[in-house]
Length: 180
Image (cartoon, rainbow, N blue to C red; front, side, top):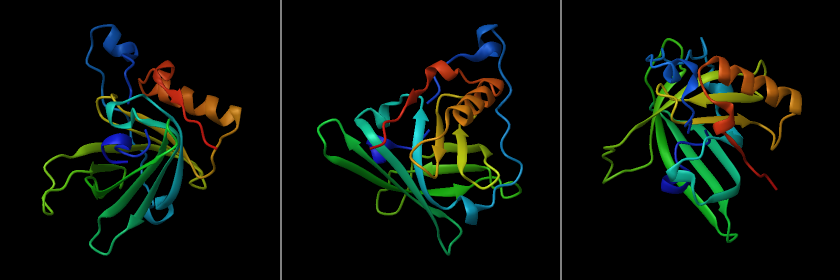
């Protein structure tokens, strides 16, 4: 959602246990093999670490990923601001790791087709039926929980926050997204 909604759905500000101990943490482990055709489609943001490019998003944060013939992915992010108006941003994602399809880079800024700024988008986990996804970045500054439905069960959400903690994220750094 462009500058407002950003990388789609998911910033981690927690230090995590390794960083708190003064160690440089190893990168998060990405999902071994993402089927991009199954990953494509609509997602609801369930939770995120607050970030500057989504600060105006108050609720109804969604992302839609559409596979393109050139191998890239169109990203359309939307949200509702606190004043009730909508915000939308369109970007493009490129696969960085074609072996797993779990590491992508995303850009929402284009100058006549040239994209000078790219952000990481690492798929850390997906549900068996692609009903949820955990997304983050190597440095753990950004993170999202996405789902195909506007909410997840408390049990599933607890399990996902445990997975994030196991990956070195601070679950307390996430905020839950309001979906109408």
